[in-house]
Image (cartoon, rainbow, N blue to C red):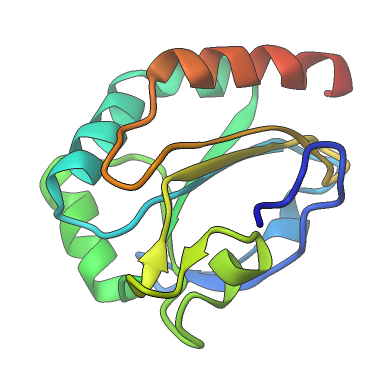
Length: 156
């Protein structure tokens, strides 16, 4: 079961597509975070979703929200994908232990071996303020991001 709004987001430490160690707690007191779980790099729906985020990155930056994608792919796969698609935001490898962070957030699909499409908007204090999840095979609406960012504003 996915974590609920108004709960503390579990801290984690993962490698980015560039091999940098990123901790969620690094953003506490500094920036809100949009944590975007997606199943797999290079897949059709995931590419479409993340390209839409890429094309609308200014919306997150104007609200001072750090956009972070996360999947069970390796950092090498994520780097190749980010370079191919010109993603100018961080992608994190929830590679080993396999899907551990997705499990903590309650969005890992055991029968599939990857995370569901789930988004958590986390305020500067580390509290989940908004979240949305789609059914397997269903893309997230960009309007859901806009609505979630509105929920984030009072807490920021």
